[in-house]
Image 1: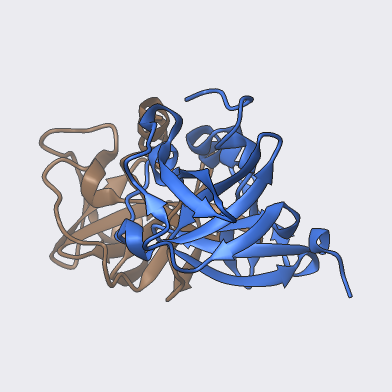
Image 2 (image 1 turned 180 degrees about the horizontal axis):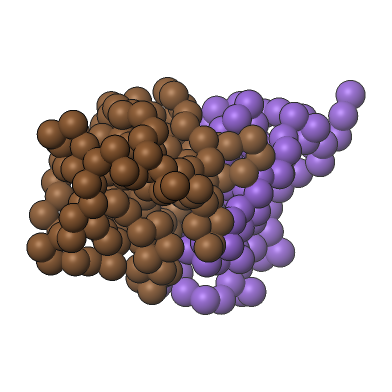
Length: 138
Length: 150
């Protein structure tokens, strides 16, 4: 049984497989660093580790908004290490069968499906594809 | 009393925190207005002007050019760190000096392969001070005849 971690960034809702979700931080600062590529807006500190923060607004077609005021950082595990997603709200963890997975109209590498749950549509993120896209731009 | 080598100076540039070994710092010039001649520049070497320091003119470097950062602090409000180098003194213009701390207060940060790929080996040494990441500023990477990779 696959479970999904759900979160919101502004008006857009996202889901990532629970197996990839490491931690949720509340109210931790995001620090700028030099030479970060488009799509990475800074880093957060997790223990001794610096974790790049992914700017989903700049990566996903049609998404727009501001990252200022995001309260949460969702830490996920990718093939290239831990990455963080800023979030304005967390929406819980649910079993996949409690909602409906549907295909996206224009499938992108980063979004593999839509997850309909409680009358809201969550975009299911492919973390590894997101990271591969970032490294190709580096 | 500890030597300068035991301490790091922390400064900010475009919101990013940096550290430099205090051993390399000759002096901190808090007010560069009136001492900075912007006409003597060589942007190909990141030299944005000359700073009048101890009765001579020394090159003033703006690291934001190399680091691809955007600082909102105007040149006349910058702080100059005068550093000693093999070719004499030179100045690096920063937004603010934050403080001086003993080396023991810093701990090395771990960078994921992803971050290392983005930042390159010259920026890969980052320390944590009270949870804040600070990039190690290596003077030789910014000024002098050994500088490469412009």
